[in-house]
Length: 269
Image 1: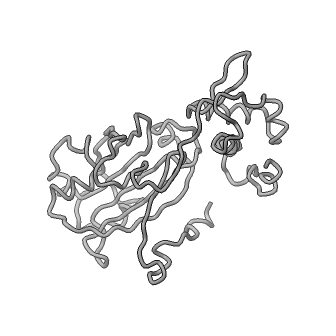
Image 2: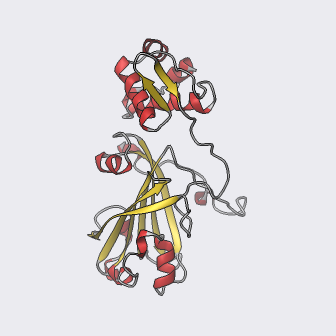
Image 3: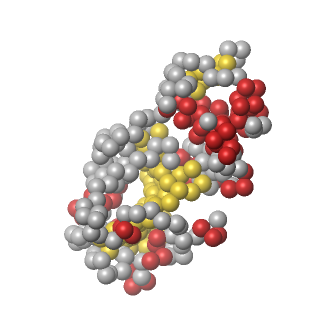
C-alpha cells in the first residue's frame, strides 16, 4: 500500500496539504478496513517512519491527530493502541447531515453571534443591494456533543426580525424561514468544495490547522430566474461528512445538476 501511495503522489508536499494530515488519513483507513483492529497495538514509530518514508515528527503528528479524534490512545512504555474504528458510512438518509428540515436529535446548536454582514465575498455577494442590509447568524452544529460544522446563514434584516429571538438555538433556519416569514417557496443553488481549514474554522471545529473540510455555499431565490435573497455557508469536518442525494431523471436532466467538475479557482490553487 505504501508503494502505491508514493507512486500516486499521496505524500507529495507540493500540494499544500500537510504530510501528517495525509498520513493520518492512511492510518484512519487501516483502522476502518480492520488491518489495525480495535484494542491492537499499532507498529512502533521507527517502523512507521521507515514504512512511509516520512520524518518521525510527521508520524507523531498523525498519531496525535487520531488521538484527538478518539481513534488511538498512547500509553507511556506500552505503545499506541486502537480504541475504535471510524463511523460506518451507508446510504441511510438519517445519517449525519446538515440539510434536514427538522434538526436531527443527535445534533445540537451553539450560537456564536448575530452580526451585520457585507456583500464583499462568499455567497452573500450575489444578494442584490435592493434587499437592504444583511445580517448573519453564525452558529456551531454539534454532533453528539462534538463540533461538526460552522454555519453562516445570511439574510436581509427584515426577514431576520420576523424570527422570534432564541428559536435559532434549537431549530434550523430553513424551518424558521418557512414558519415565520412570508417566503413559501425557495429555489437553492449549491456549490460544494473540499478545502483546508484556516485558523478560525480549525479553532471552532477543534481540528488541526489545514485539516480537510467540506464547504457548501448556497443561495436561495423565490424562483429559478430570480436573484438570491438568502445565502448560506457551512464548513463541515471532512471526517464526519456524509451527503445523501436522490436524483430523478438523470438520463434526461443536464449533467451540470449532478456531475462533479473542476472548481473555477483551480488555476489559483
